[in-house]
Image 1 (cartoon, rainbow, N blue to C red):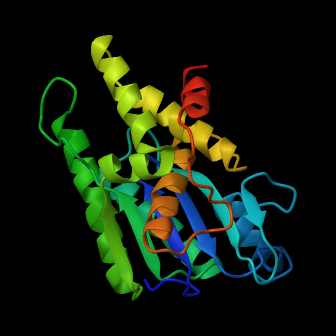
Image 2 (image 1 turned 60 degrees about the vertical axis):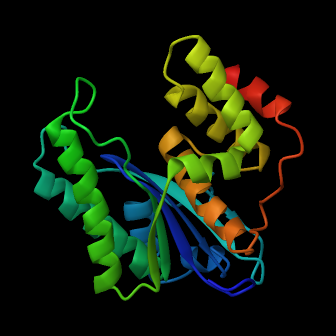
Length: 233
């Protein structure tokens, strides 16, 4: 992706509750006036009076985000992967995109906290995204490591402090880090409804900034303290 290039890109936080976000260069209000408005409401949960989208006008682009609950709790893996494909296809039909970024599954070692089923699920979701990208001719489909995107989005110092405090307290840093991501989203004027959406926004934003395509909602972090306060509140 070249700096300053007009493009549409998607960020994903893959799981059975897949968070998604998409940045595109058109005004989202045109969707509500177009032929795909019913599908936008049904498959993406987009409504004209909704809080999960932001527009900066015809030349400023738009951001929207949501969460897909993939199949029932006891559904087969095949059903989960099929539903992910259907949702990605619906998103592509409503808002065509050419780049896709997704959080890479890490620490996939079977133990008391990670079952064989969850490992197969994580790898299968990733493989299906790559297959979708090839089938739909996307320019790019890229894994993004959480240890890269979250410090870029939330601030390296803040992320390290949260990890250090949790290590000293002998507890997982997962929830505090997700809370920090939600706080960072709010600081940028965004309104994710859950951590899945927040992480999807973080994945997408970090890649846009990395490519020097700073989106209109982006503001560099100047001090970590307020973010930490909000994350621990």
